[in-house]
Image 1 (tube, helix red, strand yellow):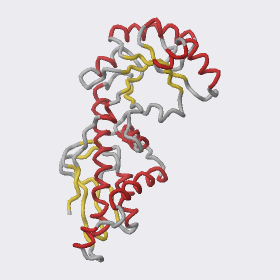
Image 2 (cartoon, helix red, strand yellow; image 1 turned 120 degrees about the horizontal axis):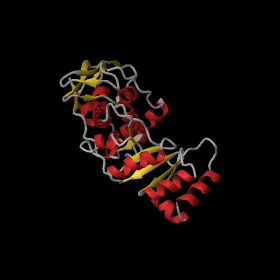
Image 3 (tube, helix red, strand yellow; image 1 turned 60 degrees about the vertical axis):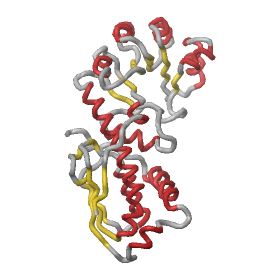
Image 4 (cartoon, helix red, strand yellow; image 1 turned 30 degrees about the vertical axis):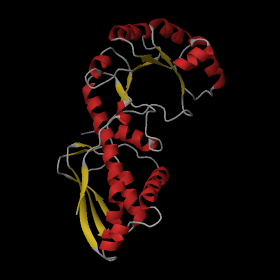
Length: 284
């Protein structure tokens, strides 16, 4: 695979999330099972393996879990984030004290399995639209506290990120339009309020609204739950004057037909809210 490896979130963000997960698991007393059964100085070499094939994401969090518990654990990455693992294949090898390895096992695997599941599902969507100009993008339908990591997993799967939050792009949804009194006043107010670096996207659900959005130069227009015929007509009407994003009713069985309408982006909430975990395990 020739895809460049994605840039992970800063360690500062990853450490905060992983530290909270470890604190949740350890509570006030620590890992009483491991402390009771394993000698303090016992060492071992173990591996993290994929039980099923898939796109790997989340090693940045898994590695952080072990290093927070013992910075002396040696970790060799075999299949990095953004690359594919085979069933039964080794993803990473660990060498060090047994206690922190066993204590961090579940937190590390939780992150790795969840994020690899997102990356794997994203890669399936990306493959389904290959040969079209459409790019697969995520949404804000993420697990609270895990957005930076889940959006990173989407990048590991070959997708692109939508806005990260309410702070980095203006997205005027249907309720904003209704409360503002229409597409045109909503966009005009948004442009007057926003700085020159902020892009404006607006959601429309019919072609008449598309014409209004184009008249006030929206940067991106989200075609919400439109039919394939209406999406094709929207592409014709827009003629490159704005990016078009298809949203709603997207599945692996429908995404190819949506891409073939000529839209630029296809947003899929399921990438982050419905991706099944990739089965990974630590073999002692």
